[in-house]
Structure formats: C-alpha cells, structure tokens
Length: 304
Length: 318
Image: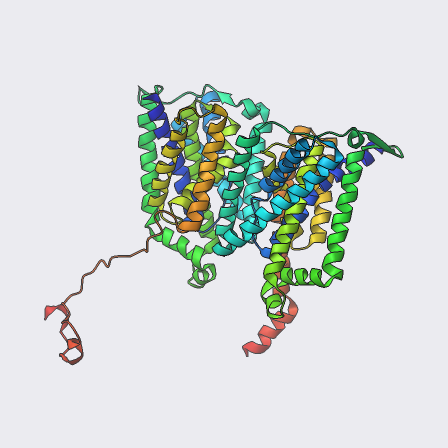
C-alpha cells in the first residue's frame, strides 16, 4: 500500500513536470490553432539562457531568479516574433507546422554548437533535500513543482473564467471569428497566448535545469509529451491539467508492474489505443444517434 | 569510389521513401511522420529473415514490403475517424512506438546495438556481396520501384488520390470509396518504404535503431516539401540536391567533427523554412494533369465564328 502511494505521488510529480509545458503548448494551440513545434526547442533555450545568466552572476538563488526572468523575456520575444512575422504570413495549418519544425531544428542545433551536447545542471542542496510527509519521502524540489503547477493551473482557470481579459481569451479559443466580430482584439489574445506559453515552456526547461539537468536534445521530448497531452485534452485546459497528471501516474504504475524499459513504449502504445478507441466511440455514438427512432420516424413521415 | 557509390545508394533508398511519402503527403494529402520507423520495420524484417532463416535479401525486402504494407493498412484503419491534428500526432506516436520497440525488444532487434553481419544476396549464381555489385543491384531495384511510382503519379489512381486531398466529400458523392483509396495509398507507400528499408539493411550490412529516429522522418518530410508536394520529379531533384549539399558540409575544411551533425541538421531546418516562406509549393510545384484526347476531331473547324453561319458539316466525311 505504501509503495502504491509512493508510486502515485512519484507519477503525479513526473506528470506535473510535463504538465506545465503541456499547459503552455495547449494555450498556444487552443488560442491560435497553430502547432508551434518550436516550443520544445524554445523551452530548452530558456533553460540555457537562465543557466548562462546564473553562471554570469556567480550562481545562487538570485542568479537563477534573474536568469529565469531573462529566459522568459528571450523566449517570449522569439515566440511572439515567430507568430507575428512567420506564422501569420503563412496563414494555413500545414505551412505553419512545417515552418515551426524548421525553426525548432535550427534552434536545437544552434544550441548544440554553442553550448555543446553536454548536460548543464545547477544544484541547490535545499532543493534536493528529502522532505518527509507522513510515511512518504519526497524531494523539496518536487514539492515546489507540484505547488507551482497547482498555482499555474488554478491561476489559468480563474483567469479564463473570472476576468474580462481571460473571457476574451476564452472567446478566442471558442470561436475566433465571432470574438473578432464582437470587438475582442483576437490578435492581441494570440500574442498573449504565445507570451504565456513561452513562459510556461521556460519554466519546464528551468525545472529540468535544477532537477536532472538539461541538454539541447531534451526539447523534442518536452514537445512530444506536451503535444500528446494537448491532443488528449481536446480544447480544455482543465482536461490538459488532468491528463498530464494521469499521464505521469500511468507511467509510474507501469514501471511498478512491468519492466521500466518498456515504459515509453507502453505510454505511446496506450496513447495510440486511447485516441483510436475515443474516435471510434465518438463515431459509433454519432451513428447511433442518426439512426435513432426519431430520425427514422421523421424520414418515414417525409417520404410520403 | 566507395564514398560515391555508398552515397548514391543512400540517395536511391531515400528517394524511394521520399517518393512514397510524397504519395501520402503530397498527392493524397495525408500527413504522416512515421516513414523512418516503417523503413526500420522493413530493414529489420529483411535482415532477420536473411540472417536467421538464410532467405535471400531481395526476398527479404519483398517480405519487408508486404509487412510494412500491412502496417500501413492497420494504421489507416486505426486512424479512420481521427481529425487532422489527431492523425498527425498519432503518426508521430506510431513513429515513437515502433522506434521504442526497436530499442527495447532486445531478443529480436538486439536493442540499441542493432543487428550486424546482414548477408548481401546471391541471385542465379551471381554474388552481390561486393560494394560495387550491391550498388548495381540497388540501382536496378530502385529504378524499378522509382519508375513504378513515377508511372503511378500520372495514373487514374493518383487522380483519385488528388480528389481525396482536395475534396473528400465531393469524391464520395461521385461514388468513390474513399476509405478503400486511403487503404490502398497507405499500403502502397508502406510497401515502397519497407522495400527501401530492406535495401538499406543490405547497404549497411547492419540494422541500428539510430537510422530510424524521428529526425529521419522529418528529413523525408523536408525532401517532399522542398521538392514540391504532389510532384514526384520535384522530390527526385530535392533528394539529389539536398543530399549532395549535406554530404558536402562534411568536407568543409577545418570544421570541428562535433559541428558536422548539427550543421547538417541546421541546413535542413533552413531549407524547410526558406522553402515554406519563399516558395510554398516547392522547387517544382505540382503540375496540372492534362489528359490528351485519344481521338482526333473528324473534320477541321473553320476559324472564327464561321461555324455559326456555315451549314453543318456531315460526319464521317460523307
């Protein structure tokens, strides 16, 4: 029982770490309908910017804090510039996807050349120390990450539902054209989403920097997990938050019962199976409704 | 010489995969990002059959092609009701699933070490085990597959696929079974890609998961997009030009070895962005399909508006 609880907590923590990036990617995707494939590379770039600034300021908590602000600024500026000068110019879905893949490749490899493929890490003993909550032992960093995720998820939810600006953003997610017609400046909403998304991506990168270390190739995995969870979330940020935790728990439970080598394989397999069953089920339900008694009666009545 | 023949063989193999992908992505409008993994399945199938059962590698390539065609069909059945975005992501996930399988199913694939010592074939007493011999075999087999794909590009089948891309509902209203069409194109593309994978196993005489990572799939997409979606000749041009430039990067004097890989990848990234921004339809855009009439007009028509006043000409020259 204790093992199960520990696995659930470890899974949730792992899911939450991916979840922050997923919320950022989902926000961008839901608001702009653009698949921003450079997201992972930008998250890693944010981590490197933070690292460089922190090292330049001789490390320490203040150095990382200033570095984080620098990372938010740099990644947000690049993201908004990409949206404004590249994606808007291209217009449709597939070219935007291709261009963002291209920019992602350029960024990742430029980082490989500038920063070498080696792992960069900043450690603080206060973050790696073990905290005991009841019978559960957990690292201080993980506790902070869970709290941060909770604050971000809750904050986003309250912002979208309780504030005027957030409702504008929500309206853009629902129907951008109609939102534009009633006077919402959807272009600003999109730029805002890119800003917030870049900040959330950088936070994920910086957590990796403080946790297991970061290297340029990490961007692809951040992107892939964020993508998967966003697609699972189907247009709802609440669902994205919930799926990210479930995603982590599923990985953790798998490694409890089966060989850990197969965890990634199992996760991708389960995801493909889930998406297939979900869409087949949706189709089945639609088919069942269209062949319901009411419709048959209506057809019979009109055919005479 | 060895470098040149090996590069040309690699080019031919990549060309088959890129043309197969252009059928999916360009002609049929089905965005898929798992070509590298499917090529891997073909390579492992051919290599395992050749190494463990002593099957001729060419037969192994055909078996790999059939297996990959089956995977393509199953994938299309699985993704039948998915929307555009979900389909894309599922294809990425399938790429990762297959790649993870190569890495973790050690009993069969030998994990990240891969399989070594794949025997090259012997046909009618002729051995193709030397590099030059295998070069001619690969060139001949690739020529057959590439010619077949180029022929299919101008066929009725490709016309129907273009209809599928531009207006699925309209095509359905004409009585075409669009789902069957999708199954066919996935089977065709899977088979060609799997066959190319088998040839790759013979070229390298080994199969390693590193050759089938998602990045390779993205390179294939870049070949198709840069060449021109829906135009197979454009893909031929893109594969040749981009591969030559990619290999030339290695020869830049004084370039640190650790920079070669990243610079090659950056080159592909720059090509992708440049093509999308400057020439979205690719180097050679899709050509309109003009079908020449097989019958000639029976009588020549008088110029201008004379036909309005002149008496009706009799047919059959009577």
